Length: 203
Length: 203
Image (cartoon, rainbow over all chains, first blue to last red; front, top):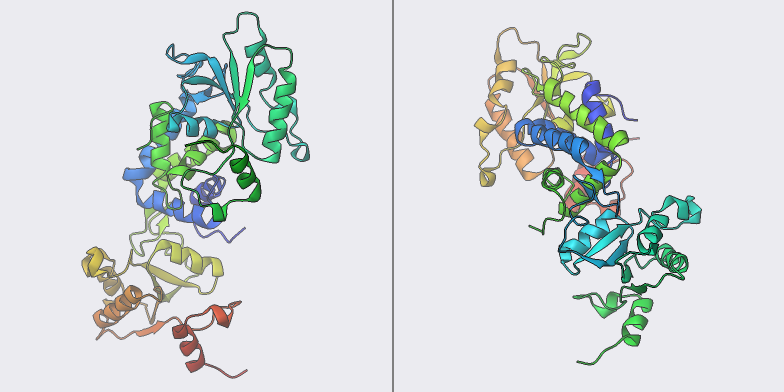
């Protein structure tokens, strides 16, 4: 720890800010100073916004999304196609797909991926609740799109989920691999190039 | 603006977090999600810490330091050498010098540097209050160390301050230029190397 220069209040603020992803000890100090300098424009409204989030934000009991109501806005929206569930690792991925406005289905947030090295097993993820959503007799679900990251852990998790859903009549799909839109071939790894060639399509 | 995926509370939290230095829109989303996921471990204590800062933190009337009291801990410390004032651009610089524990004097925070392009003139900086601290008849100040950044604006500001202090009997010094400790010559600019050679010393 560095020498304490300021009062304990400011030190504590810096220490807590440093726990945010993307902020280290140095940038947390800068952020704390910025907050203190902009008391009225930033510190006060941010404190209020965090207080509101603390009070109101919760996890959706159905899909695991983060929202101010449970079921969340997406799960309780009648215009959403309940026959499709998009399975994602994290709420951030759900947000990314929603920003792309690419699909009007519902979601299921796993809360991570299988990772034996980190001690994360199936019981740590929302897999049994997914099976429960799909497996009951009057489930509307026709398709499960497994939209996990294209990492080893993600793909392992995808396979595990596919195994768990065996015997349930539901279509299971996964995201296409290929060249990212705007991507340059020169910068892509060989695995992506192989996938892009294999899945090539006509004009 | 991106499409609103979440409730207005979360969107507002993300927008405010994005105003922190070091956090962009994407990392602000990640930070907001992290806060929401760690409600008890992080969101609640950080909200409290910010509320405390909001309530208690203020600027020192003498030196411009940020603290929970005015005069600040440094200005009111009798063990501090009041004959030396270290002039810095920003509170962050004061903190950096205090962490280095390099000098036991007092400080004066300018609150920036002269920058005509940004519309920052002498009246926007705490320069007249510095002259006031040094200029009065029973001032204990014997030396002013101008510890501004080694930028063009910093050096311009240093010269301006020196001009303003003309006629007052006080020693004015500035930081040494040279090779940073641990620095590699290969990575240094020519100006630094010239300064390091010119100010070379015996072993």
